[in-house]
Length: 344
Image 1: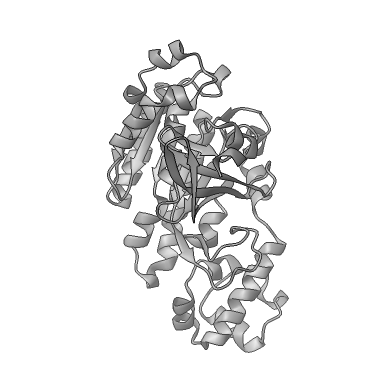
Image 2: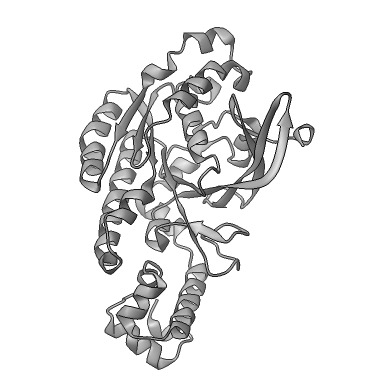
């Protein structure tokens, strides 16, 4: 979109052009303080610029065109899904995660993102008739150590979570043997992992599910605010690698993302329905995501038997094949499950 199409004062447009910001998407990739330094505009002018840019993006959502360009839309319509392992959440997702493209799961610390990712690492190992993909998972940690004790607990309680699966089948699956754990402390090691080790595991059929936990950690820590353009280039290279892996091996990719504060809670097609936080990394990353989910945690306690859990909520922010909707959930010993009226 040309800058002259935005309802902004010519002085603001001239300052943006002098800063060599070529599109509204580039503007939304830069923080407000950095925009002020780059353009020399006042804070009120920057707020007007951000508001106009966000409004323009809502009028021109990028997701469907991106899907068609990459040929991944047909995979959403193929019907092949990776089950979450909970009927309530699977209903929200029309069967689970699609096998094409990147699914992002964002939320604040403690919302339950890693819990759900671990659950999917177990679900992928079930045969297709039980809504798995009959293969393993690779889990890339970029900040925290892998939660092995919680994984072992989820494995012990699989028969409780997956009552739809014959107990004999569950006992025959050696879940922990089919989860490959990688640690990436910087972008270089992450790229090596994604370009060498992960493709080898996929090509050998050892895995068919990829988790990156979390995508924001390295991109936030390795770049200064003035390096926003280089960060965007690296981010696009990273997402291109993920899309290639997903497309070549028909593999669902889950990226866990952090959140950042937002200026207001006004409607935004790229953010949650009603929240004071939004997924990190801006519009440059949002354009690479096929499905954006968000988990939230509330100061409300729900109960099931002898267990207590804080109330969670899983929300579909955008997806080409899903309605914008949400479901309440909780984290129990056996995993993440939707909350029913009897739990309240």
